[in-house]
Length: 223
Length: 175
Image 1 (cartoon, each protein chain N blue to C red):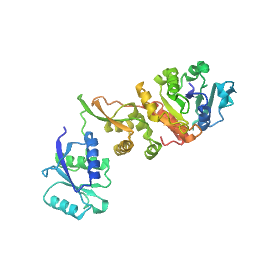
Image 2: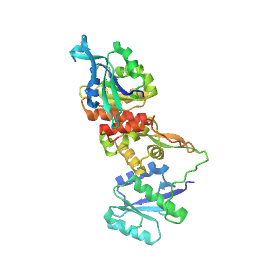
Image 3: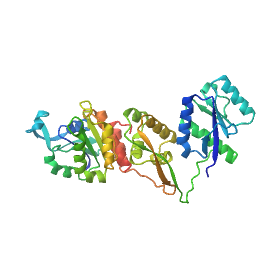
Image 4: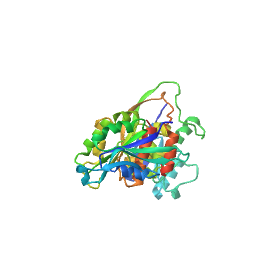
């Protein structure tokens, strides 16, 4: 069951704040809790830009006061291992990992990661945001993500959530996220509301997969 | 075992035979005849039945790539060539007077193959005319509730043709 959490940002540049809020919104279907960005100091967690002395000092003070802090900055300005941190530039996968780790720690009391809970048997319908390609991406993007033609085909046929795309493509979630982000920056992708039924998770066995794999190999295609 | 084949179609002179050359492992088999009509202004010969090239896979399996005759008067061949094909590439010459009308004609004539398999659109000669943009093609396809890749392509470029084949195979895998 999703819970509502609040998060505040300190010392962020406008662009970082915009990117963070956008990614948080996009990730809302992947996080274990529903996160809302607030300015309230009583929030559940604060993300502090620690690339300035002021920010670093604020983060340390908050940590000493028992507040939950995620440090945001260049690798060199991060604190000791084990602390929650987000490296610059912001990446969807990092945010997701960070937030889900936080939630995991709260709910289980130990650090071991478990899979995102899925209600296997019950039928549950919900309307969520999906992504759909409005056009085939340029070669630059295709070359940057080997195997992305399959992602393109999936997202061109119908709007899918990131989770569905990961499931159907068999590709890693962070690659799918990065690919969708890259397409969004070029306006190749649109966001659409879709209704998903958690029960209908069928195996998608590609037709002629073996033949096409050999053809791609023959053509020297990265597919 | 059924013949494994893809089909490339499009207007006369769009570059179907050239595209097959770019992909084929062997010199394409052609059924050309001298042009006698207005087509003679742009090329000396044209395909009257079909032409095909072959891609020979590591296990010896041969995959044929057929080009249809472009002219509508040879359309009786289209159905024959399309029978049992794995997928379709439609090449559209963007410098022609009404490329969207050309696209519509091929979609209508190959609708059974499109419904049973899948297709991609390769747009050629974009450098010669920008009256119709790639977005226009997508809008047109969407108006017909068709969703497929539309890719700018030069049939002389193996890289471009491989990109079209790759997109087609990806669409077929996800059908």
